Image 1 (cartoon, helix red, strand yellow):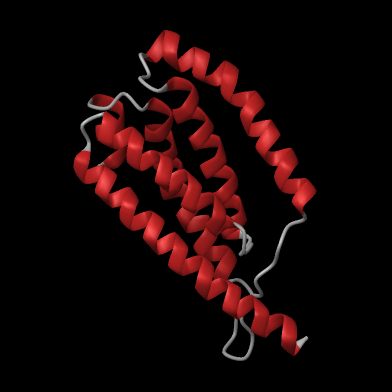
Image 2 (cartoon, one colour; image 1 turned 90 degrees about the horizontal axis):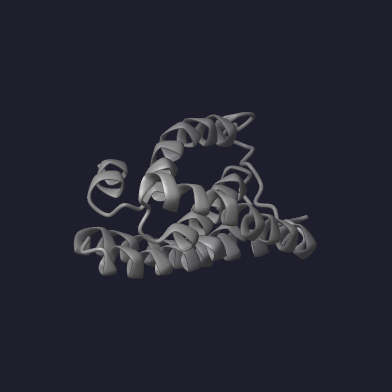
Length: 156
């Protein structure tokens, strides 16, 4: 539903593509999280070095420019560059989430908060509220994973 509305009503083209990506990656993530998991063994939370995050953010910034130009000029995207940048950052955050990287939640907090404004300014008030809920869930997820990560680090 979000993908359809993003395409047709809000002209957030990159976000619409992202919503379709989520359906596919959701299955991949579920398989990854369950792979090798037993009652005695839970998949461990990891962290990625800061340099990797910086490189990923720079790559997202760089590839957003030509992608947004294309979406603005050929698909009438409303918030071309910002929408496209958020899409690429969301893909990176999803990869981190699938890998169970603690810092995925930081990306989600930032991305979801910005999407609140994009949807609000586009007249998508219910979607803005949905992304508010997502941001709140991300804050709770970060707190929970931080506690689990600390316990995990203390037991190793």
